[in-house]
Image (cartoon, rainbow, N blue to C red; front, side, top):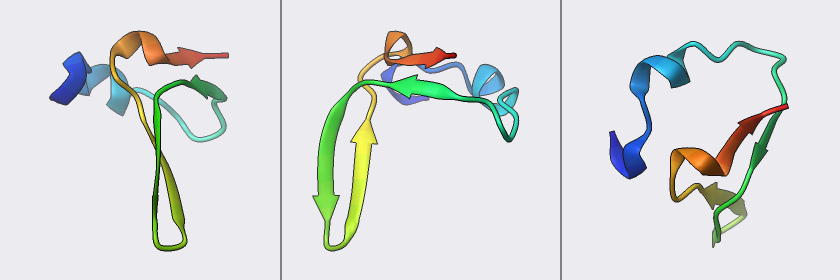
Length: 45
């Protein structure tokens, strides 16, 4: 998986969990996205 993310860990996330995400910000037309650079950019609150 890109940026070193563990697919199993991401699949274990459940609806309703709160995440703090850091990364690069992008805009494509009317859609805003944040692209985390490494697993450290995702923190479960």
